Length: 294
Length: 278
Image (cartoon, rainbow over all chains, first blue to last red; front, side, top):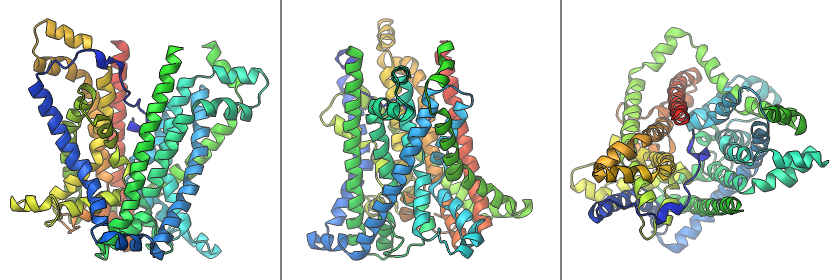
């Protein structure tokens, strides 16, 4: 359903078969069109971030990213990811164990429900938590009397981030664990291992690449989420500002050099994410192929 | 079958993992989402209808819907072409480009938003040439479409790519042997099995575009009736503390996305059934 769960393209062995039946002219035109489109829509915007960031020189760049408000935003983003990712990791493992290793009715419904946050607009993801915990929300008066603030405060930011990144790890793990089957686990249990031993010694090592893949995607989204976080944050500088929100504030103040400097940190994170993702795909492809050869 | 049903007894942790999963799912996803409908219901039918069919809101639906549709169409055409080139041809730098297709998933939407705005504004790298041709992109519906195209591209490429890789080339060779030209082979042999994937990719890109906010707000200019997208109206209502109004419009958007999700699942279910039967 979502792209994330489908089989990723793999380097095919078929490559050696002759299949370029099209004339070279057609081939090069199509390749050219694809390259121009990708260049215009992906490469140029990426380069523009760095070009704008360094437009006013290295010193302005360094000053922008070492400013106290920026550092506070970086800290909050790291904190948010450090809480949201492990929470969804534990959920992902529990969900995958339950769905992949057992048979029960309603599995498809359950998987659709897990996917729900992917179908919800970021703005709506933020909105539902405001409706729940905001001053005029359902639990607002109760929380207010207890002196707990969730909306326009750090807990709200973490909560919506957990919601938005909810399906990532589960979606990666479920198909991988399903493909693994249950024989090894059954053998472990028969030999006297308890459930936790089986999970940590057999299941998780078997799915480690899929797990890491999910964690990387989840982390990228957790650190980069904008719409949902923007709704619940209140944009208090140095307090409830994550990196993407700080980019917005700087940009709206027409401080473009600083906005792009901070944005370049996120662009760099995106590039690292893509490189790790490709490396993991390559790695899991190779181990799958080795397994098949055996 | 017997072995399958025995699993439950052999492997431990079913109750714990199921319980944990359901509790977490309810607290994080189901209960908060249901609040949206509770809040909407508090409006009453007439007020609900007035809110969601307000002139300014209707204009935003039209804009969001048409820009998302146009972007998804552009992506369907170019996404298919890119998937084809990436699967079938070899050229230097292909692996890097293949990895880069996922950039819109990895790049935070706000970063994409300000970058595209800088590029397409009248002094930007691309905008200045468009301006000379008399085309304004930034702060117009065209700019919104460009941002939504950026966001949706990987959905189409990544749903078509694996299907294209699985296409058995024997059929193509058979078609060629039987005298079909390359174009005819593509149209009659290669394209039909790609169609469900293309439609799924199109719908995923379309659904994503309907709710997109971060990459659009910067380039759209946000002029009421002209370049104001629906998610922005929700935020405006929220800032005016009109919670029920925001919830009402949000539930319309959410209903549209769920409808699309349902459609996607239906297509996949049908094509997998056909696959199994054939």
